[in-house]
Image 1 (tube, rainbow, N blue to C red):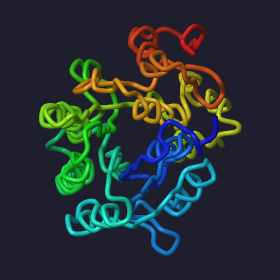
Image 2 (spheres, rainbow, N blue to C red):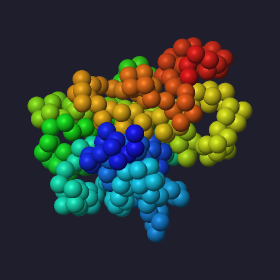
Image 3 (cartoon, rainbow, N blue to C red):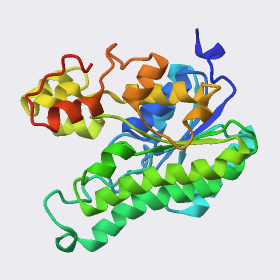
Length: 307
C-alpha cells in the first residue's frame, strides 16, 4: 500500500511541536499514511528558537512530503494565541477541516534541575518550563478544537512522558517537571470528557526511552550507531527511535474504533501490541514494563524479552 491509498488519505493533521524528536516522526508517519500534515514550531531555517538546536520545521515538512504525505511548515510560538489562531485559520482556509491534533510542544529541556528541591530551584526558570509545557497545549487546543469538532471522529493526542499509572507512583525528576507531565496527562482526560459528546477522542501518549536528537547528542552517538550508547548507560539498550511513537499515532488515527481509547493513557509499546507495528529496526521495545521489572528493582540491564 502506498500513501496515495493510505488509511489517512484526505485527512488533515496539525502536529504542534514538530521540529524534532517525537513530534517530527509523528508528522512523518502521519504523512506516510497519506495525511496532509501542518508542522509548527519556533525554529526555521532563518531563525532559531531559544533552544538553539539546528532542526527546523521546514526539514520536518520535507520529510513528511518525501514519506508520501503533504508537509506544510508554519512558524508559530504556541504561547502566543494570535499566532496559533492564525495557524488554525490557515488550515481552515486551505483545507476546511482538521482531523488530528497532536500537542507535542515542549522546548523546556534544561529548565529543570535534577538535584534541587522546589525552594532551591530557580523560580522564573521553573515557571517558564510550565508555560512552555502546559500553557502551550492549552492555547493550541483552545484555538484548534472548534475546527476539529466540526466533524465527528477527530483525535487529540497529548504527548507526555510516562503513563498515568507510572507518574502517579513516582516523583518525576523535579517539582516543575513532575507537575508539567502530570498536567498533560490530566489535560487529555479532561478533553476526553468534553469531546465525547461530539464524537471526538482525546488520549495521552508517551514514548519509552526516546532516542531524540538531544538524547543521541547526550550519549555521543548517531542513530546509525546508537547501540554504542550502552557504554554510558546499559539501559540504553532498551531505547526506542521516534519512529515507534510516530507509528503509534498514525495507527491510532487510522483506527475507526479509536473512541474506545478515549481518556486513556497510552504508550508506544502498548499501541504496538494493539496494532502490530514495530520500531524502525523491526523490534517492539517495551520500556515501561522493562523499567518496572528491571530498572526499578535494580536488576542488571538485560533487554532480552523486552524488545
